[in-house]
Structure formats: C-alpha cells, structure tokens
Length: 255
Ligand code: ZN
Ligand code: FE
Image (cartoon, rainbow, N blue to C red; front, side, top):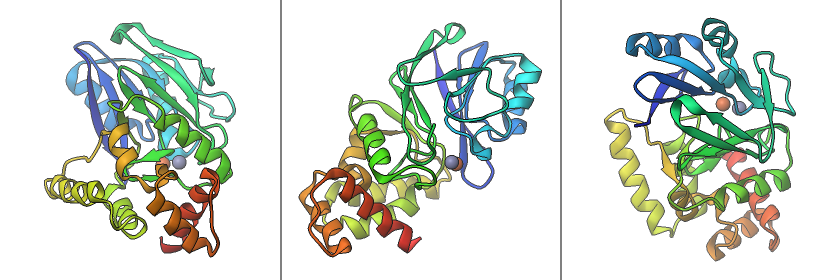
C-alpha cells in the first residue's frame, strides 16, 4: 500500500513523500529538516529523491538527505543541480522498486528551461508547472514552451492526481474567477477549496479533469476564455499559445 503525504515547508511549499511501511521517496525537498523529521518519526528509509527544477525551494534539502541516506537523486538533464546523481529527460523511467512504483519523465519547459514532471501510479508530480487553477511564472521559457508543456499534462488521463509544489489554490482561483466568470465548475470549486483551507488542509492533490474544467491556463479551447484573452490583448487571438500568453500576462499584471 502506497501513501502520498504532504510535508509543508517554507511559506507555502509541499514536499511530497511517497511511502509504504518501510520505504519512502520524496519529490522536491527544498528543506531537509521536515523530511528527516517525518522519516525518523515513522522509521522509514529514504530510497530516492526526485527533483523537478533547479529553484532552491525545490532542491535545497536534497544534498543533506542524499548524504544521510545514500540514495539516488533524480533531476532534469538540462539544469545544473549539485545534488543530482541521475539526470533524466523526456521518456526516461524512474524505477522505485522498494515502493513498487515507476515514473515516466515528461519535459515541461516554461517556468524553467529544464523543468521535468514525473508521472506514475496514477499521479503527477509537476513542481511549478501546473498549479491548482494556475501555472508557474515564465522565468526562463516562452509562452509557446509553457503552453506546449501544459498541453502534455492536460493530455494525461482525467483521473490522474495532480501533486503541485505550492498551496496557491485560493489565490489562483481569485484570478480565475476574473478571467472566467461564467464557469460554474470553477464557482463550485471555489466553495469547496475555501472549506478545505478553513480547516487548514491542503487543496491538493487535484485531478487533470478538475484542472481542465476550471484552470484558465488549460482552457485555450474555451470560447469564453478566448474572448476574455482577446479583450485583454486588444485584438482577436486564436492560437493556443497566444491565448495562454495573454492569460499569463493578465495574471502577472494583477499579482
Ligand atoms: Zn520554481
Ligand atoms: Fe517553487
């Protein structure tokens, strides 16, 4: 039996810990301390670290954990991350035999140029690429790259659980409501997520189906979003990348 546990870190990061009775793997350990605390408290041996991109809040604790447990550290081939021992890229597989799990690597450039996502056991670990009702900022890539990356994630099975690296959901919904005011699924989601946050619980994981129906950064085919993006841009937009780019600029302007 596999469980996936959120370990809160910093202001609003989640370090995702995949575990069974004896072993664990972690995704994006920006801080070693809370991970170490969980592992020792539960008597688990860390067998792998998976990193999505080079930002410190995602990989800052990897080296300390690697030294303590001697486990491999998987990370993107196109980025320089000191702790990484095995670089990975599109279509590589990360096997975690102790957890009877395997993850397929998906290249998702945009937030950073080498950003990767890990897909397996009906779960997607997407770092700062896809967020609940949002997406990562374009620090290194182009809108075309990010839209293409998000399209790959949107093509995964509807029931895929989406484990994002930050609790940004309510903030993202505030913007989504502005961009997509008539979306009933989004309005219903806001009510549910508010109740979850009032209880202090994570709004994650989400699902690909829920993101496709409510996330303005995946809805470049929706006529309302196309109209709203075109109005923001001041001229008619038709390509998915240009619609995505306008929505991203719009949110950046309001943040
Ligand atoms: Zn980041
Ligand atoms: Fe981050």
